[in-house]
Amino acid sequence: MLRSQEFSQEPPPAGRIEDSVLMESSHQPRGRIGILTAGGDCAGLNAVIAGIVKYGISVGYECFGFEKGFEGVLSPILMRPLTLDVVRGISHLGGTILHSTNRGRFGAKKGEGESASIPSEVLDEAEHNLKSLGIDALIVIGGDGSLSGALQLAGRGIKIIGVPKTIDNDLAATDQTFGFSTAQAVAVEAIDRVHTTATSHDRVIFVEVMGRHTGWIALKAGLAGGADAILCPEFAFDIEELVRFLRERKRSTTRSAIVVVAEGATIAGEHVLDDITAGMEVHFGGIAERIRREIEVRAPGEFEMRSTILGHMQRGGTPNARDRNLAKAYGVGAIDALLAGEDKVMVSLRDGAILRVPMEKAVSRLKTVDETTLEYQTARKLEVFIH
Ligand code: F6P
Image (cartoon, rainbow, N blue to C red):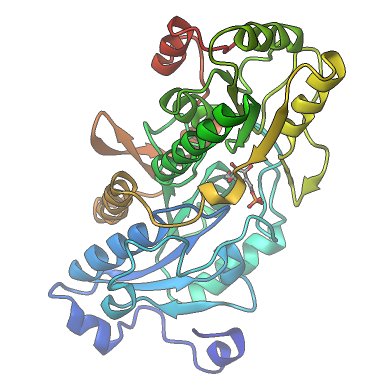
């Protein structure tokens, strides 16, 4: 990896393609691409990087990776060449070889639908560094926060292409973000495991899953895992109604219950967001335990209850086949976007095809669960508590 000092002593002249990289490509040199992974990590990041680099080199691009998201673009620059050797055998690995951060000087997201301006001196510095490194295009692999930040760098002579990443699956401009499928599978497996112990002890177990302001993981994993109640942020629920539901369950032949709780779930009439803020974004976590305690207050000793938070387990580990393939397709799609001369677009999945959507549109709207969502309707008809 090149660190700033090393780099400032001998920056590669803009536009010059390293011989070693040129030899890897059978095409005319096209330019120099920077790649970064920003925001919270998820399964599939390495498969995107590999897809970009393998296809990019094959059509004549020289690829460089910036480390720790946008931090690597700012001084001290953290950059390294990405060759075929570097990306060989990484697609099945979780995490990101480029490291990531959801903090730092490029933080653009404050909360749902909001974004903050990145200071102009930070944008100037990023532009200066990228231009002096000869970077023609930056491929930003990130969620709505990172893509909002990237957008503020657009229009400065460096093309920006976005790749939609997040386990939350909350970007309206794509049918699916990569990372979601694996997170969902991890949650289903955990729910399956919790079921057996809940049954053995006739307990109510609250399983908290991630998702920020949306309930995609909770709903889809909850339905697949046979949850008895699913609490999504999109539908504030009445805690008294939940108590009544649990009482009925206790009277039935199956006395245990699994309640899957999205981390952003809201009790009707209450503001339950954790007010600890991490960086610029609200930090979620702990709602399942809060609900458990609230029920204990309202129905003392009636239920034996436990709560568990799946947390970062949903983000870590090996990507499943769906995420690997989607990630590779997005990586290839990002290069196709550059070949087509695009700028400020995000690659998106629509009805099984990779399309490109304006980044501005991509970050403007969250995709949320609603009454028309298939899994929601299915859950209602199967008498799952979901409101
Ligand atoms: O946005 C992805 C996500 O995993 C959310 O589901 C979760 O609320 C958040 O990131 C956790 O972030 P951190 O890595 O800061 O704990």
